[in-house]
Length: 299
Image 1 (cartoon, rainbow, N blue to C red):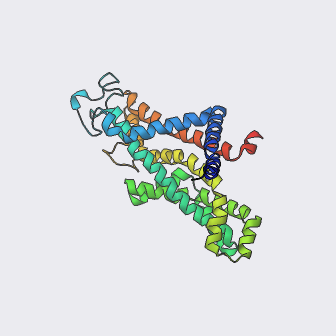
Image 2 (spheres, rainbow, N blue to C red; image 1 turned 90 degrees about the vertical axis):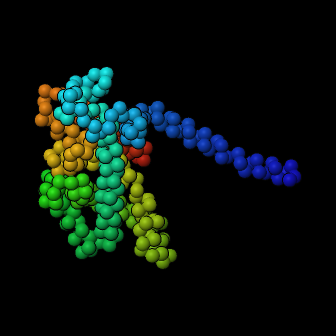
Image 3 (cartoon, rainbow, N blue to C red; image 1 turned 90 degrees about the horizontal axis):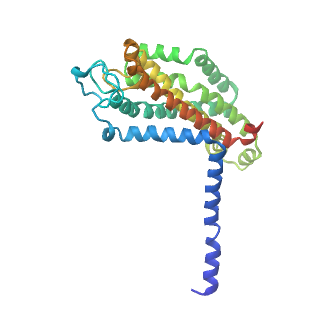
């Protein structure tokens, strides 16, 4: 290889490294300016690691009973105490993360995807189809989320699958409204008009040109909703309409604590787990919103 070719290759490779360093500096500066999002990320990572490593770090099995040590307060052998069946509360809180965290993500993924498609179709099609889909959305919005979810779960019967379906039924309308608004807004842009003029198909315009440029607010809403979905699912479990015993789930554990008010640790620690994950995803959502719309944050 000639010296000129080597020099040309070096010059081509030079922009890559500074670009990565600039990106790292930008991320670090954003983290310093927005410490709450760093806190949110840290809490979420701790929760995820706790869920993944629960079998390795929990001192007991989530269903392991020891009646001789029932309702013991927190101590060295049982960091969060024991419940009415002598099960270790710390171990059950860890295993509860393996239920609540994936379910929160699944609920938002299913409800968000369905609602986004409904809203996108309504906004793009317009006319009677838009009117019909939006009136259906308003009908779901007319009921409080937890009340309608309770009604659906009670009608189907208490189980994990039924509670997931109940929450999905009431979760999609907010995404449908936001997606419709974004489609109506982005659909007026010049590049969408140019795509139509070039004869591109409806599906390609929808996904490649409209939804692709409207995902920012939807991602922010989804991030905020993970914590809310976990809270709603825990509420159903608290009422006996979600996860059924003996499954280690935070909402049902708080319900057990409500029945044993003298044993404060039974409801406190799973309640703190719910609070921490809801707080973390709210901090993440706020941080993403500020990152995607810095001008709106400054106003």
